[in-house]
Amino acid sequence: MNVAHERAATQGATPAHKHRTSRTMVLAAALGNGLEFFDFTVYSFFSALIGQLFFPAHDAFSSLMISLATFGVGFVVRPLGGVVIGAYADRAGRKPALILTVLLMALGTGLIGLAPTYAQIGLAAPALIVLGRLLQGFSAGGEVGAATTLLMEAGREGRRGLLVSWQMASQGGAALAGALIALLLSKSLSHEQLIAWGWRVPFLIGLAIGPLGFFLRARLDDTLPAQAHAEVQAAPVRRKLPLRLIVAGTMLVIGGTGTMYTIVFFLPAFLALTLHMPGAAASASGCAAGLVLLVGSPFAGKLADRLPRRKSLLAAGSVVSLALLFPAFAAIAARPAVGTVLVVVIVLIGLMTLTSPAGFLMILEALRPEVRATSLGIIYAVGVTLFGGFAQLAVGALWRATGSFYAPAWYVMGCGIVSLVGLALFQEKASG
Image (cartoon, rainbow, N blue to C red; front, side, top):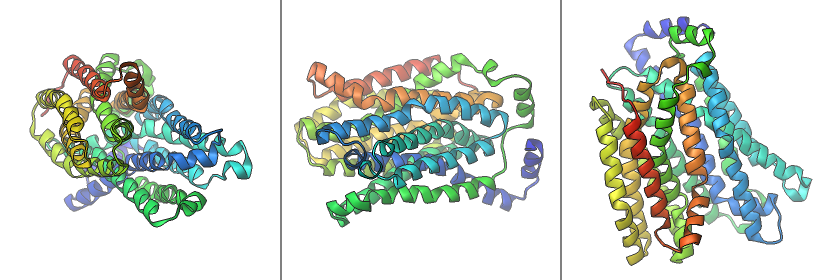
């Protein structure tokens, strides 16, 4: 691949061509991350059915737990994907790495959607589901680093925050679409139809996105600077990794990760268990969070572009969010209604959305181009694996140990404090 040639072609493009390329780049880059959250949402929604069909056990609860554990396998391999695919993106270019991730993700999704059940092929059935989750997790680990790096590098000064924000917006849009499709299938099909074929529909939709993602990403111009390409060829990426920035950056993303996975994906089930709230709270809160991310992220990205320094916004957002945590749970305890949960989700996810583009942009600008995709891949994958993928287990263990209704708030509070420490340690690079 001739990186310098591709960059020269991009620099010589007309303004109209650049505008079209920018829109194509946003769609192509955001597609893979969106597909990951789409799969996350529909797997969570149909985890009980998947457990019944692929992980038969002596009772339904055991099948569900095995199904959820298999889903967690995808998180475990994320850091490996962040390192391997991130290093590939820094060495060969962002474009080939993104083509690889979307193909792996589509393959993993297709394996889950097309896998024969345990009743049909025995132990090979759960093995296919595990393999599908491994492929999804590995590709997702490298996806965020490569795609967000490409968006940031493609933007000029004053527009990078907006471009980066579409990664978060894609997560919201995909989660919203996944929740709505799963809800539509559950309402329109009988239980027998869902078991027979209905649960497969969202995964087959995800599989169909693969060829579209390949087509769009194959047409992208690469953004890896020629000088960075030459430097990374001269020495392995691992020798150049900025460990201090990686540690501080990982701590920084923990706050948003803890908020997202606890408040959106775990809180409804926790409220159903403790306050016996209806299942409608799960679908309603998921849709509300997805909508906030989808609509709010571009505005937050524009705000990040206007700020010469991002630390002040990140600090203010974190402090306000932490200050509202316990009052929010007290409000739910006092009035356990779907409307109260929606307000809490919208406020807390709204604050997270406000600061996320600024946080990603600050991290990306502080990293050298020759290690940017690898470093961000490690930061995001480790943060999400440890504090997102295991959030449900951690909050559940905390609740069992203390019996406190505020266990989720304590977990999010802990993540937020770690994030504030990471922010204090992070060395921000002046923009402009």
